[in-house]
Structures are given as C-alpha cells and as structure tokens.
Amino acid sequence: MQHEAITEIQAAQTLDDLQGVKTRYVGKSGLVTKELGTLGRLPPEERKARGAEINAVRQAIDAALTEREGVLKRAALDAKLSSEAIDVTLPGLGLPSGGLHPINRVYDELIGIYERLGYAVVEGPEVEDEHYNFEALNVPWYHPARDLQDTFWLEDGRLLRTHTSPMQIRYMVEHEPALKVVVRGKVYRYEATDATHESMFHQLEGLVVGEGISMADLKGTIAEMARGLYGASAKVRFQPSYYPFVEPGADFAVWWENPRGESKWLELGGCGMIHPNVFKAVDDLREAQGKARVYEGQTGFAFGLGPERIAMLKYGVPDIRYFYANDPRVLGQFRGELG
Ligand code: DAH
Image (cartoon, rainbow, N blue to C red; front, side, top):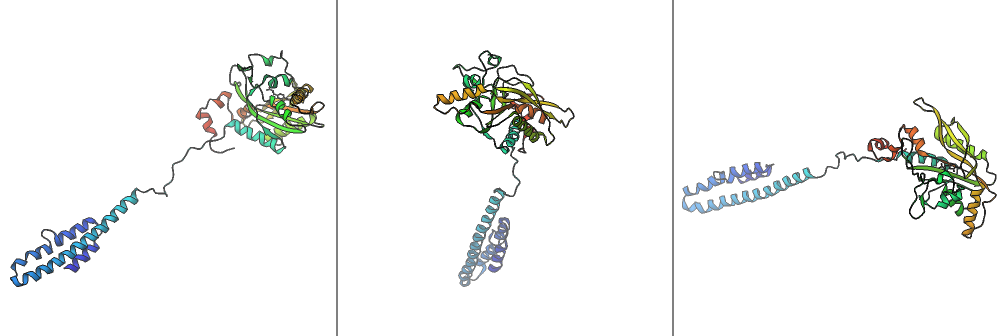
C-alpha cells in the first residue's frame, strides 16, 4: 500500500490531484485510516507490532505528500509569475514621430546647393543695432524702410532686424576677402499680417566678395540655385530694381513649373552688386576696431530671398500664417520622412 500511495503522490500533477490521493489514503475514511481502525480486532500481542507498521506507512505517506505539495505549489507560483512577466515578443506601441518643418526643409535644400558651391553658412543676431541694419547698408535716415511702421524698435534704441543683410556687414568686419557666405535666419517686420505677410519670416542672404567678381557671376549663381531647386531646365529672369546696398540692383524670378498647371514667374528675391558705400562702411567699422581697411576697391554681389514663398508653392500652402500657427492639421502633414 505504501508503494502504491507514493507512486500516486508522485504522479499527481496538480494540488487537486494530490488532495484526492491524500483523501484516499489518509483521509477520515482513507485506506490507512481504516487499517488503523482494524487494530482493535487483533489479538493484543499482535496489536503493537501492527500499529507500529501502519504508523510507519502513514508517516512515509505524509512525508511524500508534504514534499509533493511543496513541488506543486512552487510550480503553480512559477506559472503565475511567468504569466505576469513582460512578453518581450509582443509588438510595441507606436510612438508618434516628428518631422522637419516645411521652412527647414526648404532651407536644407537651399543651403545644400550653396554648400556644394563652397559657401560658408552662418547665422546672426536677431536683435540688431540700427547702424548695421540700416546705416552701414547705405539706407539713409530718410529712407522709407526706416519708417516706424516697418521696424520693431526696442526701448534701448536697438531693433529686431528687418532683413538678414546686416550680417553682410558683420561678416565682412570679421573676415577679409575673398569670401562666399550664406546667412539663414528670422527677420521681423512691423506690419499687418495677411495670407502673404507675417510679422516674422525667414531669409537666406548671400554674399560673395573677391577679385573680378561680376554681374555675370551673380546671374550664374542665381541660375545654379534655380536649377538646384527646379531642375536642369529652370529659367531665371532678372529685372532692374532698387536696393540701397547694391548698384546695380535687381529682382530675380524663377519660372515655376507647377504640376497642377498654373506655371508662373515666381518672384524670389533681390540681388545686386555691392554698393561702394557698403564697403566703405565696413572699412570704417574695421578701422575703429584696429583692423586693416581691405574692402574699398573690392567687388562683390549679394542676394536675399525668402524660403516661405518657395515652401508655399512647393507644398501648396495657401496662407503664410499656417506655417507658424502650430496647428497639427498643417504641420502633421510634414511628419515622418525627413526630406
Ligand atoms: N534685404 C532685402 C529685403 O529684405 C533683400 C535683398 C535685396 C538682399 C538685395 C540683398 C540684395 O542682399 O542684394 O528686402
């Protein structure tokens, strides 16, 4: 009986099975219990030996039950723990990905073109001195651009730069010719906003100074940019224009082949040959800082354009204010691919 009981105990796979075996052998009416109940019917001289025998069987069965119970309890706990553990094979939760702002995409494209042409890329202060923003750029005090309506003036007499052109001055004060540089950054105008005007927008400014630089170099550079933006067959148009810091000055436009069928000349920005007064203003600043006058007599060109206009047409955004309203319905369309 001991042998069978122990075999059954070891075969029990669950605590319920084990409980069944326990009841069958050592429960109130179990086989071992019944056997103990028969002792009274034995002759007294046999009782003691038989009693000891059955007790030994009972102890062996109890020991086996206790051991098996421990094993099954541990197994049950392990199963519970592993069912609660992290399943590393489950698919993860998708994290929303960001994306580059459309203006940064256009900047990256433009700056990539100029980097391949060997230009340095710089930024500059948005809070600017009047002298750099206007005076040194040959914008006299009576020029309408100085009007209170165009400029955000600060209480200390400085201003928010109205264009990136003051970085021409800052860069030339710090560097000697020859040089090629583009400036990226925000500019500010104090004016009412509408679908094509914001009080904050961006510019890309170019400056090239060196021996023998001519208007032909300027036109070739703008044409190269147009080809980089719109492909090998891009067409460029120049029209005479006036900017105080260049002479001659021009506006340039690119023929924009619209896939939706409204192709047109896209007025991108202004450009021209650097005015001698600008070189003189740079040399005056350099001299005041103990640096050599090296710009008078140089030639060079400059240009400035706005990436917003390119981005509006490229991405079909009808209102410049959408770029800066932080509305996820607009910017969410530029998520994911970074290009
Ligand atoms: N600074 C001018 C503006 O904000 C743009 C510009 C025109 C920049 C002609 C230039 C230039 O460098 O040569 O309207």
